[in-house]
Image 1 (cartoon, rainbow, N blue to C red):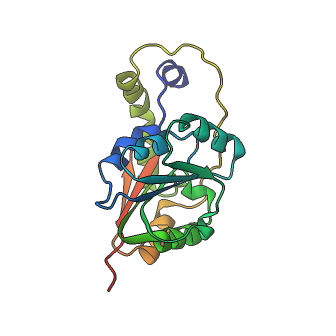
Image 2 (cartoon, rainbow, N blue to C red; image 1 turned 180 degrees about the vertical axis):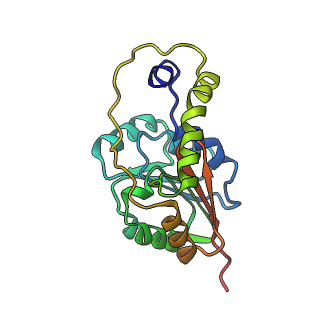
Image 3 (cartoon, rainbow, N blue to C red; image 1 turned 90 degrees about the vertical axis):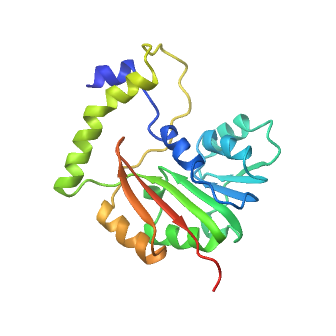
Length: 208
């Protein structure tokens, strides 16, 4: 399986960018991408929002995003903590970031910074715990090389190494994440996905 995956690699996080772009809010003034990494999502959002704010605590990731978005004057990149972001965002995104943060605190701040009608779109990882979790992981392992071949049918050639993303194994189970999400964002949709991921989708209700 490792050999097959290596011949036809695909980025499990970037693969969810279309999922995010198909669920954008009506308001398109301010977008916040928490843990912007190398800036692929921020660059896509720049075509759809008046201003995109990408944050990342890793200096190499910020440099990569700044380089990718150098020709996009409506993109700002810095290390501002989520707790210090002012409210009024139409969109908050997190891709493979939530498990790096304190779960309840991050969800509460994401809710706080959203404007009424704003959307929280998250692609996350969870620690497998139940039999269903294990079955989904097996399904992801089986389909991983198939998806890789469909997305990348040619055999990958060696390329220059990019700065690696900071990596951390998830500690929270999906059941724990579901509970935290419902406390912070009642009515949010939490769904299992292939590629060892889950998604969280929530729209902040209008005031009152």
